[in-house]
Image 1 (cartoon, rainbow, N blue to C red):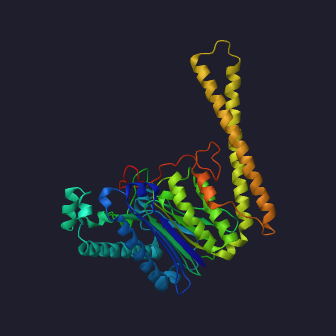
Image 2 (image 1 turned 90 degrees about the horizontal axis):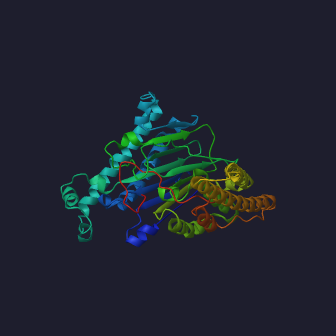
Image 3 (image 1 turned 135 degrees about the vertical axis):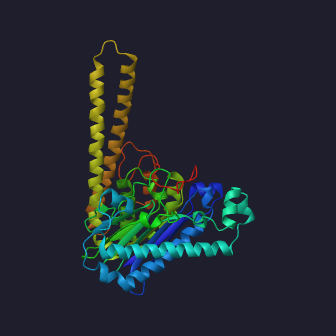
Length: 427
């Protein structure tokens, strides 16, 4: 089992002189259990120590998950099929509340312990570190008064959290807030195993600092012998740089291909140079990535990862062909009109422009398809070299009518709930 992690300051944070509010870690325990954690501190001025809160949250989660895995994990999860559990509010909506059993209660105890210890450490940090003069210049007087009177301290340190952990008998994952966890299997297919929370929408997110945080966590686990070859956690700064989940998955596939061909050290070095570039041309937000993976299985899955990319590009080509047909129908319907109206002329101009964009995108996709097919044909001889990750990041955050897997449309505002993000910050 292998792990890696990296966090970088976002482009907008650099411009504004703000610290990186993300924190990530990954580790292998003495028992050979792997863990990856990503925490994203909230960006609003109200959360002026969220960077500290994110680090505290990650360390607290690491300790508590380690204890859970040593003392109860195998007993509770070994042999269990893949299971997902949504938030308490979603359970109520689906009328399945209180049907979680012993495993659910154990998870609730684990999550409750994380929240409790995080709050204790936050209070200790606040006590030992009064509001500084620099902080006072940026804060509402009421926030300072609240801080000095020990009111709502948790808000100052608020953050989201994603955790993935794996032993030799099972794996588990849980989350509060936005960001995403992707898992990949031997066939090159991917999934998002942790249920999504619909409260995470646009510039709002659930948070460990919420009074109802225990009810806002969602989780999943599996102990029936099926393990992903890799689990990749990413903060919302990465999510917001890609137009679709397929595009984001493709970026992660590039990381896995690099691991397979170039090894861990070179891939981590490439990640360190790529994420800042992705932030600059994408979301401009802080970015964090953390992984647990089996390098040997990733290497064996190389061809299947390329095949997934080929399949994805072919789907994108079909989508562009549909756009071309649609534009052609409009062109044909308007071409024989002897006295076109102003609206007819506008519609025809749009159809011509749509056709041109789709044809250009289709041609670009065909080039990409040919490149991937060459890569696949060479992969059996282990001479194939995946395209540089940084090149993929640049493509992925560029507007593309093709919307191909390595080219996303303009950065979309993704999700976050209950805690507002600042104007130019998506965390």
